[in-house]
Length: 299
Ligand SMILES: [Zn+2]
Image (cartoon, rainbow, N blue to C red; front, side, top):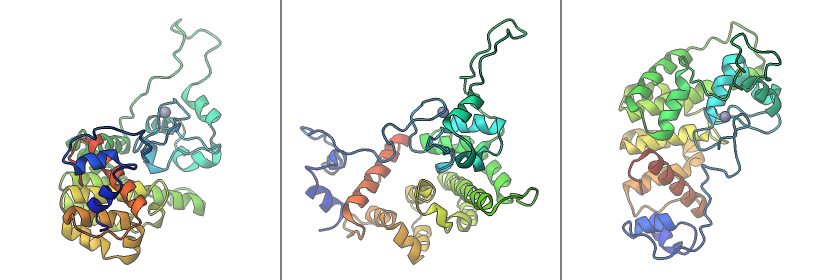
C-alpha cells in the first residue's frame, strides 16, 4: 500500500489538499482545513538583502551563490549588478561581504554636491539587466518556463564560457578553486537542463558527467541543479537516460525521492522506497514547479 496514490489517500486529511484534489480527478476539496503545508521552494521571510524582494525557488542566484558573511542573501538581479562592480563577488560573497557592504555597492551614497546635469542622481534602484551574462537569463527561463528558444541560445553561450574555464591566470586558494569548480558544475547542470528542455540530448549527455557526480550538488541549496535536470528528463520521457543515471547506486541513494518519483510516473502502482513524508514533499514541490512553468503535473 505504499504507492503514491495509496499514501495520498491515507493522507487525505492531512497536509496535501492539492494532491488529494488531483487524486480525485481535479475536483477541489469541498472544504479546506487550515493549510499547514509550507512550500519548501519559498521559505517565508526570506528576502534579498539588496532590494528586499522575496527569494524563491530559482530566483536565488546560482543555487547557493550570493550568500553573505552575516547570513543574508541577494537575489539574482542584485547578484548580477554587484558582479558588474565586484567581479570576485561570486566567489567571495560569503567571506567578504555583508548586507551593508553590498547595499553600498547597489545604492551608492547620495551625492552631496549636485551632479553635472543639475539633477539629483537616482539611488540606483533600477535593475539593469546585464547583457553579456547568459547564466541569469537561462536560470530565469528555467524558473518561469518562458523563453525556451532564447534560453537555448543562452545555454550555448554559457557552455562555451564555462566548459573550459581558465583557473591558471590568477592565484586561487583551494577553497576558491573548489567554489569555482562547484559554480562550473552548477552552470553546466543548468545548461544541460535547458538542452534537455529543447530536446538537445546529445549536448546534455556530453555535459552530464561534469555535474551529476559533483558531490557538492548532492546536498544543500545547489541540489536543485540535479533535481531540475531529472525533472526535465522526466518531462521529456527519457526513460533509458534516467535508468542509466539511477544505475549509480550512491546517486540513487542520494536522490531516492526523485528515483521514486520517476518510477511512480512510469507506474502508478510502484511501491516507493523513500520515507513517506519527505517523498510526498518532493512530489508536491515538483507539482508546484509544474504549475509555476505551466505544464501538467507529473502525478
Ligand atoms: Zn535583490
